[in-house]
Length: 256
Ligand code: PGA
Image (cartoon, rainbow, N blue to C red; front, side, top):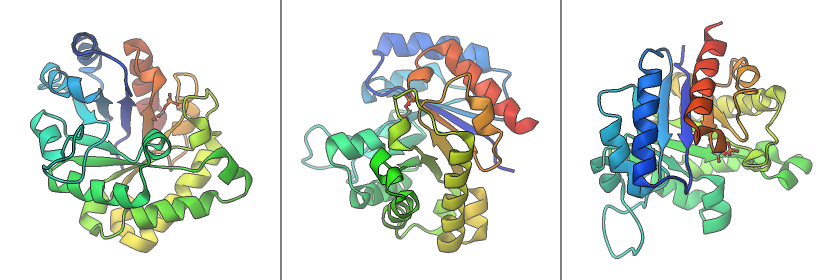
C-alpha cells in the first residue's frame, strides 16, 4: 500500500525567520505522527533554513520550481543541483500558477522532471484542467496530454518514485474543492493511463495526490477515496495547526 503523502505549498509566503519558526514548531507537533510522508515547500530563499530546521525530523523539504539546465546564463533561475545542495529532497514541477502566469508548457515540465531526477530530487508533478475545459468535457483529454507530454521519456523506475498532483485549476485558491467523487474519477483515470504507459508496477507505486482548496474539514472525505494518495495543500498549509490537522486527518482516513 502507498504511504499517504501530504505536502504544503507555501507559494510566495514566509520569510526565512517565519519559515524557521514554523518548521521548529511543526516538527515538534508531528514527531510521533507516522504512516504519512510530510513535506513543506517554502520559497527558494528559505529552502536551506527550512532543511536545517527540519534536520533529523519526519518533515521533508521541497522547492516550488527549478530550471532544467544544471547551470548557465539564465538570470533569475535556480537549478536542481542548487536546490538539492540547499537540502531539499522534492521539487514541485508544473504548478498551474507557473503554467498560467509564467508560460510553463508540457515541454518545459518534461525537461524539468528530467533535471529534477538527475539532481536526485523527487518531482511532484502538477496536472489538471481549467473550469472551461471541464465544462467542455475535456478533462480526460487535458490530463492525457499533460501526462503524455510532461512525462514523456521517463523510465518506469523513475515513474514509480514520482508524485503526480491532480489539481483542477478551478479549485486552486478558490475555496471550491473537487468533490471526493470528482477527485476519485480523475485519479482513477490518471492511474489507468500510468498503467497503460508505464506498466502496472510503476503505476501501483506512484503517488497520485489531490490539490485545490484542501482544508481540515474536507481532507477526510477526499482521502477516504482509495485512489487519493494524499494532498498538495496551499493556503491551509501556511498555518501550523491547520496543516497539522490536515496531516493527521488525512493519515487517519487512509488507516481506517
Ligand atoms: P490551495 O492551493 O490549497 O490554496 O487551493 C493548492 C495548490 O496551489 O497547490
